[in-house]
Image: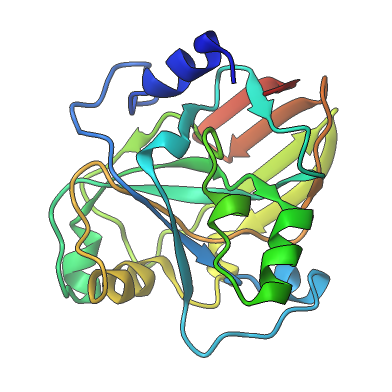
Length: 231
């Protein structure tokens, strides 16, 4: 990785939909796997009895509005677009009602995945971090700020690659709803201000290529366009 790319990763800051810096530290990213049935089916995976959780470090965070740098020497790097929740208050062992008051922003995140590496690690029975938690593996959009997250609030989101719709999801279709997810996570990992939760991806994952044009949309709130470059 070049010095300029390292600086790009180190300079990430959470921002709101107006481009203003959010005064929260950078923390961990808690990711949720297999939370949409159509994605489980397209990957021929089994449904988990409980939410499948893994993490990305703060060094995975980059701004989705910048050029999207992907590794090109470890096999295909797949898109996985997800609704991202920005945590605003410390939460430990909370219930769903308490969880609703702990989210201060809604946005989008890409869970970039080195698919061949992930499959190799699965076959060895090893963790996925090499495939999921590498530097720059979590491009985030700005966040739409809010005071609470309602049980009745659903979000539609899409990913377009080269103006072709590849992912189209709605949070109403989550196997584990957002507030239940936050509560579940908080019983294992204390959530701190500045942490992010990626809530799962719908079907339509696939390889990205250098020079692809990427547009991510949180319907009614955000539209982010960027281009893929080599890391």
